[in-house]
Image 1: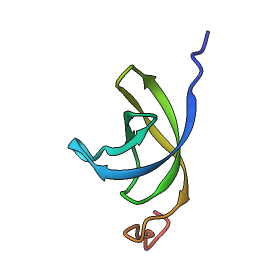
Image 2: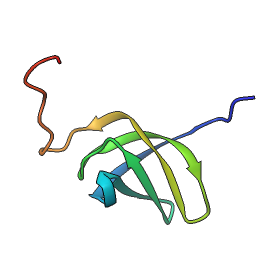
Image 3: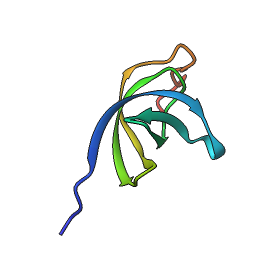
Length: 74
């Protein structure tokens, strides 16, 4: 049996320890891998506890002005 992941839309506020993106949703903190401050993203949550949630960015809806595209495809 596979556990269902929760998908949410959040705005990333800052970067925390070890480069984890920090966002807030419904009064709790969301710790996400793969985002920059100022970006609006869709995220999949692996862990959803009482005070915090953990997951990763699945889609960037609005890019941050600090995001730089890679110079080559590698």
